[in-house]
Length: 496
Image (cartoon, rainbow, N blue to C red; front, side):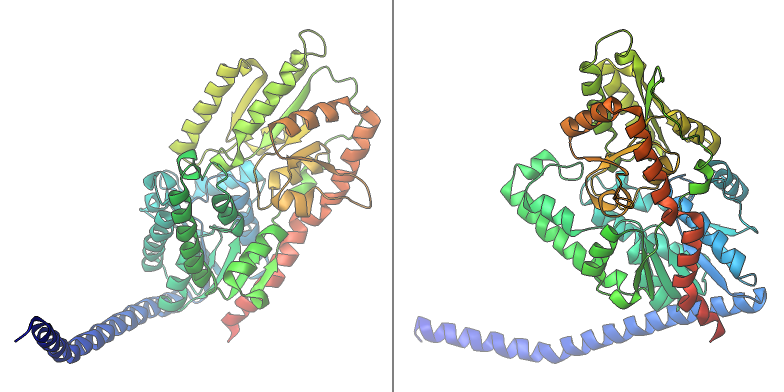
């Protein structure tokens, strides 16, 4: 037998063997799929039985909010408490639950913190479900493939939440979209989401494609064509699964026009998506006097925002350093300016970041002109804003910017990043008048600060007046009306 004939014979034998194995393999696959389906149906039956038993016991339905960092004190937490307050005021016969990972505090301490930081008091108590595995969504746990790690971690954290308490309506108010399929398909819940910031966006893809260094796109990636290409594929796959998870939502609310554009392109559910601007305590700042500030001996620049990397406090400090360098000593010099950084720290990582920022101030020789105010109560926040001349914001593609609105309501001259929500929704002309300034890098921020301080006090006052009048559309009352209108279809499921 020739070599060719032996090869043909060998291939024929392999083909016969594979054909004999095909039916058993198909049978095994069908069996495994059937077992998986039965397991899913059994889990779904168990969870829905738990929900039915709880509803019979309580005699009323329950709405649950998934907010693992509800004690963080940021803008997202203000949305949470205002949303619950609005729903409690309208729906007296509904219970409310908050899933949280804040294990070091009691429920009452969390509510006291909301009162101190946001001036919000709920009409009646809420039930807290404390989650023990919040570590699974901490970015520090995933030094590489952070978004993927946090997304998978959120599924496990969502599973813990679902097995601890099965609600009738589930609202993801922190952006963990991968929990939505769990609660909808396993828990049988109606699900909704309030999206502050998409987990992944087309802008993030553009940054990687263009090999542009950012806080989440380090130099070693931008310097490598292979790593950049790999990261683009990684982001595209993550965006695909993120869109599939988000599309499970029965109701989608977003906080700005910028977020709306990205969520529509990723989740592809325009009929279920609406813009609900976040609530800003505009009225609390209206009693801050609006008067010319030409006689001020020291101008304060105040920044409000959690100490997260994307807030880019380093840019604020470096731009402020440039402004100080352009000024001499003595009257009207560096002693006439100070920078006040106000924000919340969610965890040890944020506290370490503050220490690093303090070290940067020392290194640049401006530590005596920069003050850090961490987790301050509302009264102190208001006092610092009232004393300021400029409100400063530097986050690229900020989804909205509650701190920006608060500064404008207090009549401060706002200087925000020329991107995202501030550019599209907030720092926009009002009745033809200017409401603030936009910048995008160290030099433009320094120039803008100098320009604002060089303005005639009367001109500065006119901009401040326009800014205050323009933010009425972001008030608590506007949020309540829009949020309740958006929630009506979901809350109506109780009656069916």
